[in-house]
Amino acid sequence: MEKFVIKGGKALFGEINVSGAKNAAVAILPATLLAKDVFVIENVPDIRDINSMLQILEEMGAKVNYITRSTVRIDTRHIDSKAVPYELTKNLRASYYLIGALLGMYSNAKVAMPGGCNFGGVRPIDLHLKGFSALGAVISTEGGMIMAKAPGLVGASIYFDKVSVGATINVMLAAVKARGVTVLENAAREPHIVDLANFLNLMGANIKGAGTDVIKIEGVSDLHGCDYSIIPDQIEAGTYMVAAAATQGDLTIKNVIPKHLEPISAKLRECGAIVEEYDDAIRVYATGRLHGCNIKTMPHPGFPTDMQPQFTVLLALCEGISIVTDSVWDNRFRYVDQLTRMGAQIQIEGKAAIVQGSAVLKGAPVRADDLRAGAAMIIAGLCAKGTTEIEDIIHIDRGYEDVIPKLTAVGATIARREFPDDNSVAKRA
Image 1 (cartoon, rainbow, N blue to C red):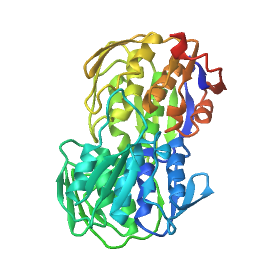
Image 2: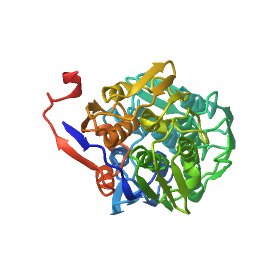
Image 3: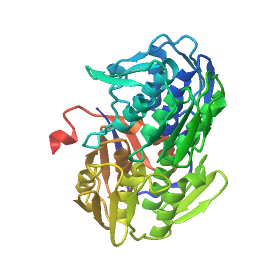
């Protein structure tokens, strides 16, 4: 069993370079299936989810070669499969984007139910399937497989009952080659949706309105390969911004788009941290103990749900009482049990967490319940007195490239260690 071991109590100082956006890359890579051609994609993060997606493409017949560690060449001219087995999707939530891409290219897709983070409840994809149905696809499930078929997709007007990043992306992938015009209303507006639209347009698609709540897609008959660079990871950058403030440090986070970080910057400033913005960098530092604030997660451009666990750690160290409300996902406070092991004073009431600020966290054995909860445990360990061991770090590896060398370079004492399986949090609890 691998764990992260952190000796806390050290402020972080220096510079960190942010990798390419995970949430953009896991949509852009399946989009390469929409053309039988060659793609060169830069700023690809070296993380477990991306490696899993590339493995899926290879299993389907694509040729994948790394030019550099962050630049990958994908040749889709010899794709020979329209089915994706469960074994390759069980740990990857974003595998559902293969449905939209295969449906858009071949009007036929067979993909196993996706895996990935489990927040303690069901994360349905019914909005995705309703969108596919509106385009003319017939959807069925059998043996854990989702099957979508259509004699030919036809553009339609689709209103999402709830803002959904996944459904917006998936229906975009299916609609780019559909006959006629597709209009997506109440669409998600996240930066990675804009990034995907830019990529598809460079392939020859005709997409307008990405970044607003109405996206118009005029179907085209053919798409082609292209060279493209993925945007920086908004959530990775936000995680290090919070770590700087929580440890009372001073970090300059480079290779970012400051506008994408505005909701996080605004809340850090509200807590009393100093945030300075530059063209492609952002500096965060704290000169004393911060004070709490209230957080409510919202679809973009609101405060991102993927930053909620990390920010809650900061609030647990701030003066005063803070209320954190997650309106995006149910049951996303499972990680709070781990923070309370470290001395945090947090009470859950439905979709809200009431956080009583305290000056001290203490090192303890904890686990990463999901990707962003794992990031929160790292921040907590960096701030805590004593040693923190984090298990189930496979979740963290899904979304953070080089987290140990990046943090070590700015003063953290953190290492990846191997432990016997019987030395787990679950067995000690």
